[in-house]
Image (cartoon, rainbow, N blue to C red; front, side, top):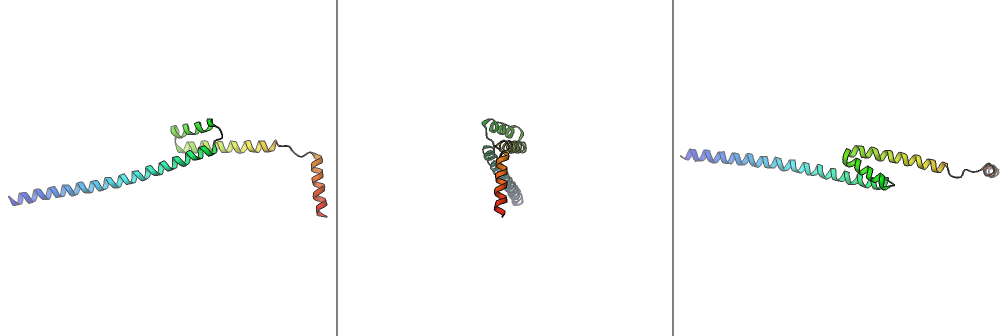
Length: 118
């Protein structure tokens, strides 16, 4: 009879030990998932801040957010890069369209530079 009770208590103890080990494994998996979630949230917040900074129109912002939601982070970053490229091309065009010095202004400037060398 004592042998049977000892055997039962050992089985209970080993099953409790097993359960405790499984709980610890689950807790560590939960901790890893929580960290991954925090990293994901931080990336999304950084990306949303970048959207607000890069996009110059509400339509661009909405498009970027749609892409982020539907197609993911990589596609959104690609869209933002294309927006930046377009903005760069636009700024080059607008600076190129600024008043170019006339020939007489160029000649005056050249003359000024030549006189300053003497």
